[in-house]
Length: 234
Image (tube, rainbow, N blue to C red):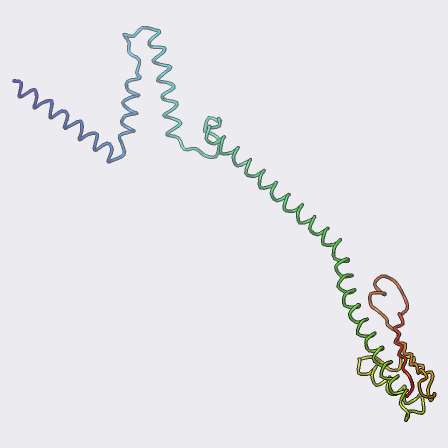
């Protein structure tokens, strides 16, 4: 008799474990559990009125929960028109992300506008510095060519074979041409030519320098570059 009871209990446990395994494998266990729980929520005729009322409220709440779980959700609102907690948090998070994205775009636009203003303010200064450096280099080149032409003209003027100032001017214009200058714009003056031995001979060369920088700052007229060389007559 005891062996039959043990065998029956063992069979019942085996059936329960098999039902649980099937329930987990087919995914229908949750639905059956909910149906079983709803069947238990039926109000019995023999229960007291207070017990029936409490059991009815509990079962009604359970049915509403089952209804919310079973019905599809479209959008952030439930079919009843109420917000879900998760949807409310998601919508708030979306609003925060939208606000942060708008703030980032406004900040980027503000930084771009500030960069354009700074560029507009610094561009003229940068252009003046670059043009000034180039024009200063050109001025040094012109001055070097004028001084070199005056020195070579003075060397030609102190020679005993030099008798006319035109010979000195020819040498000066030659050196100006070698310095990439226009000889026709130069003013050449020779003094002390055909003097006695030991007397000074001076060659004065002047050349107009017209800078682009002067036009940018609104100044008209050219600057005169002057080269003077004095040597003793041989």
